[in-house]
Structure formats: C-alpha cells, structure tokens
Length: 190
Image: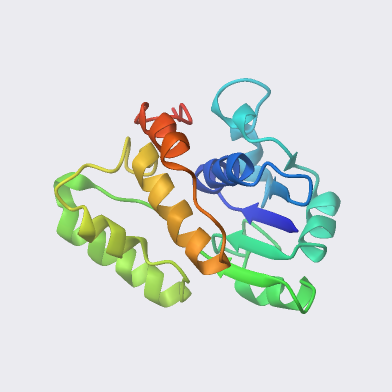
C-alpha cells in the first residue's frame, strides 16, 4: 500500500509517525514536496530527517501521487502548489485512491476563541475530512501546541489515531504510544 502525505511540516511529522506505525514490507509511506517555497525547510539535518522517503522533485512527486493508494494532504493554494489541491488531486490520482484532507493547524492560545473560529472556518471552506477543531475543543484545558503552527506530540498522535480509524488500521501499542509521549516535541520541530 502506497500512502502519500502532502503538506507543510505538520504533514512531514504525520508521515514520520505513519512510517513508525506501518514499518512493514507491504507499506510504503512517503511525503512529497508541494512546492519550491517549502524546500528550505527540508534539510539533511534537524527535525525533517526523521521522516524518510521524502520526495522533493516535482516530476517524482506527481508520479508518486498517481501511484498512491491513500493521499493525506493539506489543501495548498494553487499559487504555491500545482497539485496539492482537491481538484487537481481528483484529476490525477488513480480511481481507487482514497483522498483524506486535513487542515493546516494555526492556533493562538492567547486568542483561543477567535483562533478556533478561524480554524473551523478554514475546515468548513476546505471541506476537510478531519476536524482538528474538535480535538482542540475536547482538550481545551491542555496546551496542545509548541508554537502557533507546531503541534505537540500528543496532538500529532491524536490525529494519527483518527487517521487509523478512517483507514481501518491498528494504532500504536500502549508501549509505543507512551514512548512518543515522553517528549512533548518528539519531532524536535523548531
């Protein structure tokens, strides 16, 4: 099964967790670069090296998208990405490929109510498959973010859990889950 993630550092991080979850010969989990503007964040050292199978060449990215069984993506403005948007993905994916859209997370805890309203608005406009606003409301008393756009490990794992439910996959064992939670920034995002 070919699972492809497309999006910002949040998608790179989710790809890493899926690589840990599905570290099996019959699963190939990759992240593809959606546009040149994000290339600066993908280096040979630092947090992004944890995610393996990163595809940063445009032609290879399109080829990967066309051969994917599952695509988990953030809708990126067409001015920044020619293919990371619902319309183009619908056109170029194979017919059996399942598309799952996730929102880009941006949350200001000092202005939680307005920030959540903006997130809900983006979720509704983009018709996302996973409503992160629900998770943020459910755990409103916990700060789930490292920065305004970098989630803590707990939030990433909550998203992975929902994705596993959608895809009928087993989630991490308690031991694996607790290992990740030992660090609130397991990905070491800046």
